[in-house]
Amino acid sequence: MIKVIKLIPKEDKNLIFIYEEKRNQAEMLYLQIIYKQGLADGLRIGNMFNEIRNKDIVGL
Image 1 (cartoon, helix red, strand yellow):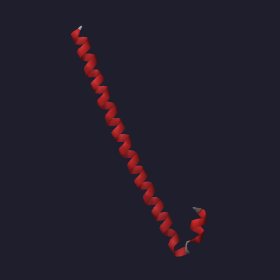
Image 2 (image 1 turned 60 degrees about the vertical axis):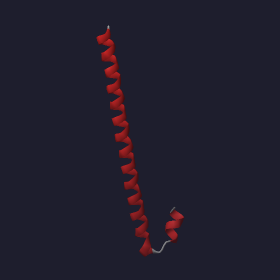
Image 3 (image 1 turned 120 degrees about the horizontal axis):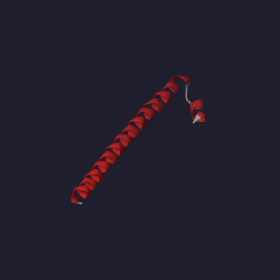
Image 4 (image 1 turned 90 degrees about the vertical axis):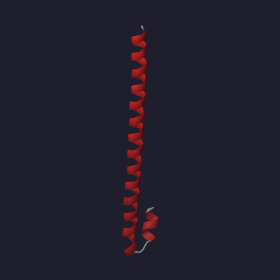
């Protein structure tokens, strides 16, 4: 990547940094979505286990 940046004219080098910034923002958004989905799935599974456990306790 450094070799490529050296070949770009000075007036266009800022575009590389803008691109990298936007790419990093997109990746962060993606990671946030994945995290939130995993958290929601984990809570849903925990609630299912609690329901099953409560049914087992009541059924005793």
